Amino acid sequence: MGRTLGVACSKDEVLLAVASEGSLEHDGHEKLVTAAVLEETERLQAMQADIDRTLLEVRPDRVRILMPEQTYKDSYTRIAPRVALETLVRLGCVRAGIPVEMLHRTSARSRLGVARRGKLEDLVVGVTKPVGKYWKAGRSLAAAAALAEET
Image (cartoon, rainbow, N blue to C red; front, side, top):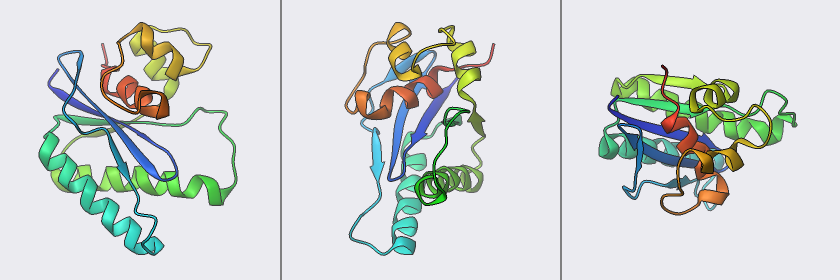
């Protein structure tokens, strides 16, 4: 199994959860936030540096990025920042030589053995108890990604 870094992105945050041997760890790596005071390109550069530093500190064997729901619909200006953050995580993993998986929520549900209906963030509590901060802010989705091992 090894260490898995689960990732769930929003438009301005990268939420993180680390799992090892099927259990969540409380290691302090919970959230990366884009610096609002910086210009957009500078924000991306700062986030890339934060992601690279986090990957060095966590030293995961793999990274799983949870994708949005298949029915997710929004404007380009609202979804583009999230896609940019997901891409920065993927690029960081490639540079660090860490395998990265883009995990569909249906696959996460199946691997975790939770219901196909209902919000995934609500169903995760049936798999693990909350660990650390920001659980209701989306970190439960990062935990779902970290715990969703292939069988």
